[in-house]
Length: 154
Image (cartoon, rainbow, N blue to C red; front, side, top):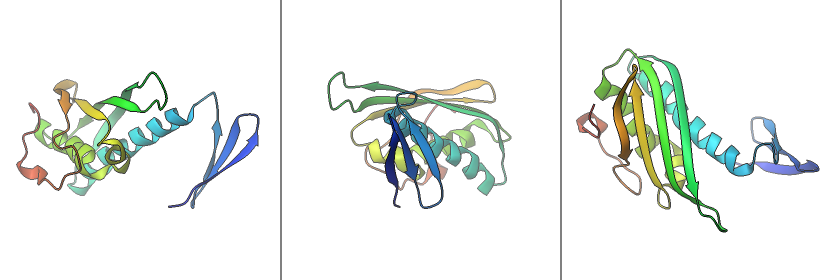
């Protein structure tokens, strides 16, 4: 993967990827907000794709993230809490496994920060909270068979 960021004017930059480009407009949206948006977009993509592989569907998906950062430079993420809210045609255990698979294995951006950031999540499935403030199972990536996991009170 290669991305080039070029200064346009004032505090505007153009990011060119291998597939497309977009404008980074600071301070309207800071680079760290773009990063967090990318992280949330990565895991949201998983929550749409993983169910499709088993013939399920997800509707009304919303994923939000709240970060606590260092007060002084470097202002890295200390904690990240993700809240997943979605409806699906699957049971709660299956829905929880999709989220766990994303945060533990598939989402590259989460796995990029997992060793330096405490990550928790809440899952609201079909209008009911099925997991609240659950911590990730591992701290350094996982090849856990999610078919046998009972990671939260689903």
